[in-house]
Amino acid sequence: MKLFWTPASPFTRKVVVTARELGLWERIEVVPTVWPLDWGYATVEFTKGLAEANPVARIPTLVTDDGVALGDSTLICQHLNEVAPSSSIIPEGEAKAHMWSLYAVADGLLEAQIAMRAEMLRPGSIRSEGFLNKQRDRITRCFDHIEAHSDELDGPLDLAQITVGIACGYQDWREWLDDFRPGHGRLSVWYDEFAKRPAMRDTEPKETPAA
Ligand SMILES: N[C@@H](CCC(=O)N[C@@H](CS)C(=O)NCC(=O)O)C(=O)O
Image (cartoon, rainbow, N blue to C red):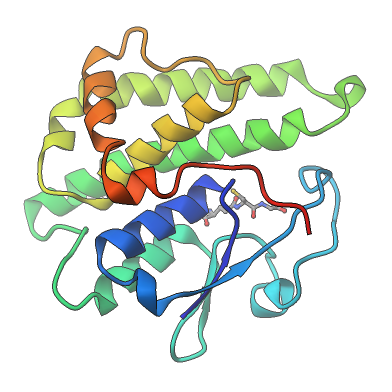
């Protein structure tokens, strides 16, 4: 399998943490991608092979062992879960709908963080404060929901937990995002422990290296 990657992308981190937790990381060839800083509002020169594999030209994109390109982190994590030899991060039965429900909130939170990142990259004169505030409000609602459902974070490892952990990590990393801890005490305690997992410690976000 081949993964188009950068350490700055929380969607890509979701895939990497999933692969590590499922024992699949050694089977993945990493293709580092480069993103000129105007990627948020302009078409940029893509890393060789990315747009050819996935015309959406976003990361993560995974090319499977059968040569099929999957250009979305949720699909990639589902694929990894299917090929994992013995473990699973997608529960069966009643727990499955609850897991996807919490997952969708955490994934929407990631989308809001990345929408803000793209907006923050625009020159200040054309940046929309209204748009940034809308994303901030969405982020607050999502953290409030996760706090109210924090008992669901205590079960066996699943994809919702991974995505919540990565959302907390991204919120901590970008200085223009607010501290998520005030008012979210149970989530804060959970995250402090979750962030100690080797798969989380080894994938802390970093700026995309220059070409
Ligand atoms: N829904 C997609 C979102 C992926 C996404 O937004 N990736 C960002 C990086 S975090 C990207 O590649 N942005 C480049 C662009 O939009 O041009 C997923 O889950 O994989």
